[in-house]
Length: 129
Image (cartoon, rainbow, N blue to C red):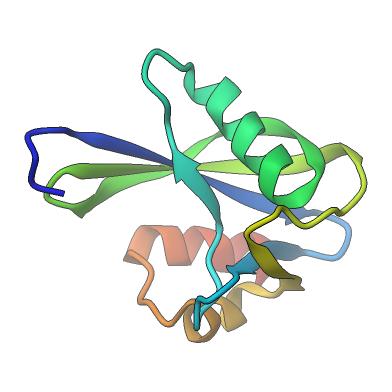
């Protein structure tokens, strides 16, 4: 990056309250899983961008239950995490998505191969331990 631009990454934490699991996916060519995320487009509203990214990658329409965490991922990238639930639709992997999995919170760090920020990890463990 480093081109004078600032990026906003929207991250959907898609939660199934009945099973207490969170949806993660793996893009083709990636070694690790990740949350459903994408870059916010210029002049796009946060909620619209979140719903667009989720639909493109998973096939699901979601309800945005609100932001749960925000922080800088890189010097020029702000990540905003939203708790979401599936409203309707059926699981259809996006063109760049290889796998989709529902997991417990305790499995996430190993599968994404990344340490979660403390407050985010604590929150996820409380809802999907």
